[in-house]
Image (cartoon, rainbow, N blue to C red; front, side, top):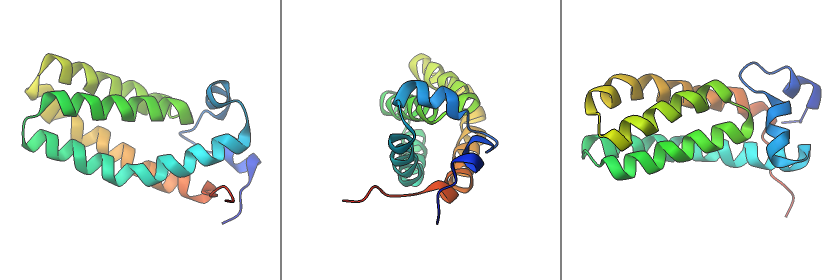
Length: 124
């Protein structure tokens, strides 16, 4: 797939300007988008496993990583929602975790469609 910087700036769900404040340049941003995309499925699987096993500590670590990665790519709203999950995990509030996590993970998985057109692996 080809990379269109203009299309990226107009992509709903991504605040590229905010992301570039973190990463510095568009080429590095593209690499980070690639890694973000690759991490979505494994992170979702781990979160779901930690819920099943009621492992609040690891759940919290994983949703913290989703929060941070989402903030880095400019997925600001998703990052804020993941912050709430992180807080629920720290409090071991399983009612809130069980209620809110599925929707956040659905949104997170939706970023595969948002990010995939811009996936360009850096040349080795």
